[in-house]
Image (cartoon, rainbow, N blue to C red; front, side, top):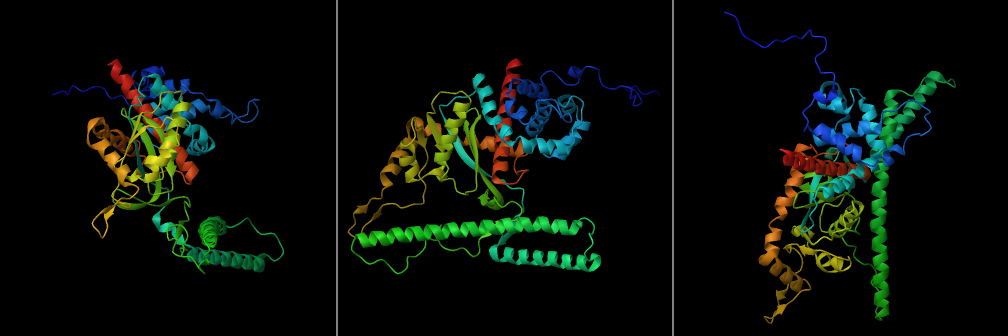
Length: 455
């Protein structure tokens, strides 16, 4: 009995078609990425290269940018994995023009063009606006916690850092004494690897220690400044100032147990999804079509101070993308509620949108006095107005769209694009990576919209 199988000629000399356009279907994401790169202004990338033709030939920025954008769209952000895909994956080989840039080249390109890659958010928004996907009737704002490229176990107090710095300095001194005894005045070999590692670690520990000392000095300065103001106010009223004012716990009192991370000193302990992690608070604002119109990164775990910066970031990003339409409504959860946010901040911004923010349960409320009459707080009137806006009419319908607008964006960035943890370290580097993630998210939205319309 003979089997009827398709042939399996593994010894065939040429398995792929000679034309790259035959390797992938016409609606593949890789072709869309190439079209996007052709429309981008590559001036910020080209400015980093010599224009006189001298020196060793470099990879074309269009090639590396295409590979990097496709990798971020598909959730592959490790430079070593990208290098491996350039060898094994057909889509990556098409984007890389059948070349194989190594992981060091890819990593250095990402670092060298950090600001230009962050600008992809504005470029992606411009493309989405041209496709009619940027509607500003309602924009949802929220924050999500993204893990840093650092372990929580790497946090150290000032006392522990001082101890470790002294220990490493003693190890270095001991190494010097050993080499002096071995070589005398003669020149020895190059620095041993173990000592080189200790030197690098010592620099990181000293940087972390200096950061804790700077934060302590800032807290002390704030306390002294407020004490002077209170003393001057007391004298102005004809009263003697107090011998000592109590420092505020939140931003003035000493914190001997304060810690800093020795791997990524800019990262902080933040709480998200019921757990505490070492990372950052990533902010994003998105339209009802889930197109991100602003993305920022902060070290502050709380969202309440992020409303004004995000409103400014939205306007800056829209202006950079050439979108002149004003923002009409902004929906955010109760984490953004404060008296300043719903009064002072909005009044200070021209063309401020209508805010849809449920009043938070925390804060001062008017409580009945001993005589039974209510004692109104400053926020009672603002709470009543906001409640009336959210409980009926179009405000209720608009706010119902908030969770269906911004939450899927975070889910897609963290799951599809594997953006739940930063690859780089430092606030500036991670902010650039967050904007790159949001920019590639917009490109995916645009690609899905265009491919769906052609089917």
